[in-house]
Image (cartoon, rainbow, N blue to C red; front, side, top):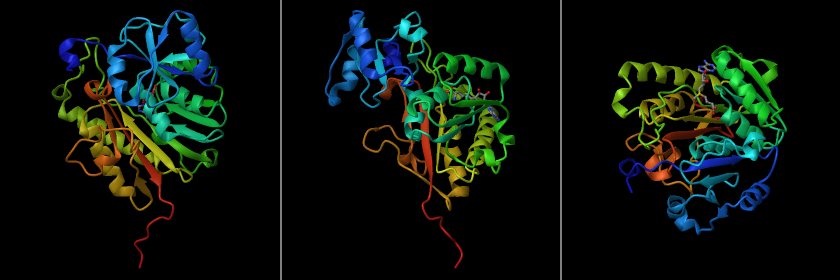
Length: 313
Ligand code: SAM
């Protein structure tokens, strides 16, 4: 169904903070407070989400640390939310940390981290064990981030208020970093409003603005790939423009393909792939309100080649 036409809001997604609690405890807590857990077969996940009524909820079909509630549900006053045990976060925004998938104890850089939703998610996945260097150049956004990660009980993060482009990749401080998240500033053209309509229609971002954003995105992604120990880099945006997505990734890939490969993410689980007419689109995923019942979003992943290609004869 055309959600934009029916004016239906997106479902509300709730991420479970594994630093403070676990999925079963959270589910039981909701049930004890009068919420009904809906069961479903994988094949009718989407229908079940769309049928959710007030005080019904379900587990997400793709991510075990995610619950789904009817659109419009407000859990800000919920005790688990206040305690930082659960966090309201769109499903699309939960994908980069899952694709990055660092192991406990790993060292991670989040280049553009504030307000910290994805940093806090990575911290949850590594159970607060390891180290996350979280950069953001905006001091106000960084202070919001410190509050968010404080509430979430995250202690493995070092917040660095700095332009990531000025960070020296050869600094020994970052020599153990194997994972990097690149979630740079973008046009935000995938974000939907309360009527479930994309707020910044495709044509309303000027060509000049797109060009400027895409130059910045290319430079920050290239910089992320310069860290010598890095083996995996996830690039994401909440934009629907190929100029900020497929075209950024393909431009960077053309410069690093001797060292990195583009990997096909969520191969058996995701139908919505990169925009057609762009190379490597099968490797990327896109999300949209109509198909995924989330904000518009793009995710891609570079992995260091096991043996670097050599063009020397
Ligand atoms: N990853 C964040 C999250 O999930 O909460 C959202 C990041 S937001 C899309 C992009 C962020 O990049 C902004 O907070 C902005 O201040 C920051 N930023 C932009 N240019 C930067 C740079 N050169 N170095 C570090 N941060 C930068």
